[in-house]
Image (cartoon, rainbow, N blue to C red):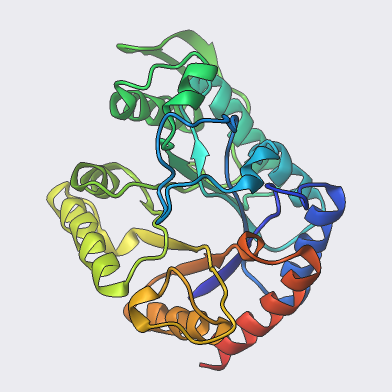
Length: 304
């Protein structure tokens, strides 16, 4: 199983020094990837509950970087690690603009980009960027269609329900052909089936493993029904640890626990067939503490 770290693109460490430190730690320690999330708004009173136990949006989101610009910065300061979005809210800009940005980043990173798309959870952000909250699934499907055309064809056009692109030459091509892998963060039955039928893999957040694997089975079944090879799909699992000083009840994992408990969770995930796991220590640790935690976590998982 590959292991990754989240870049500090949220909160007080979202600055050049913070990005550099985590980039260097990832490459020096031997991590496989770096990941960044996406926010454009931190409303004083969000229009929807945050998807967590207490429903409150983390204060760190009040300071947020552009994810693709941050990954471009990371690409220029690393040579080996893959660079992923977890997740990029891909509906907040026209798909043609998104295709250009993603292709440029894949090219500049020499094929290290992993595109993780999501729909977000907060209608306020859609309002702020003048994109309708309703019809997100259809908009996502058409966005993926434009991305695929842009990456594969030297000349293409698009006429869809939402977007019209006149016939155009596309000279810019990604390093990895036919294009960078595209994963989707989804948890509904419909979303999981969409992954199996159209995407390269799944971007879940940490859940009890039996529940996680049950949802993964839905993805794999949908892939087979669509005539795709289920074994070609990949799962990249995000873990946002809430670290405690003392061991928590197993029922609280992976929501909260000690570092050793998260190491055990990662080992079990590897044994269960999870392809990649990346951890965001920035949820509860300072930048200085991240290095120590990242080193201990990697050593503990690899030792197992």
